[in-house]
Image (cartoon, rainbow, N blue to C red; front, side, top):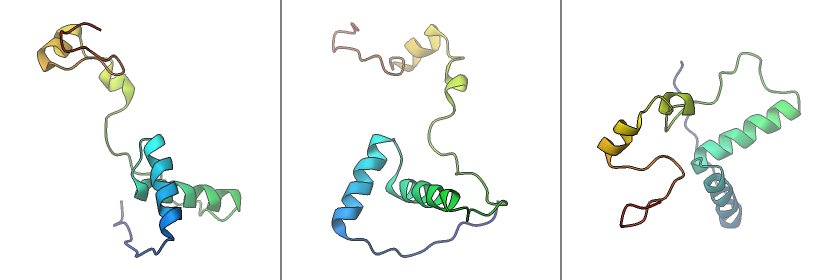
Length: 92
């Protein structure tokens, strides 16, 4: 993969705040949200180049890789399964 371009982007603070909130809702960084929106706008306008690579995958591995964990692995890690909060006393 070629090196990613770095740019300086000036935004109205209210626009930045709205994008940052939207990014948080979708579990993305603000930078990744801006790239996502730019790609979507280019695709809708028919201007997205055919040779453009996909969005970089960052963060957690895909869910299917996490499903291979056994209950013993979860207990050994001391962390509950995703999306299942645990009280201080260890009860769900």
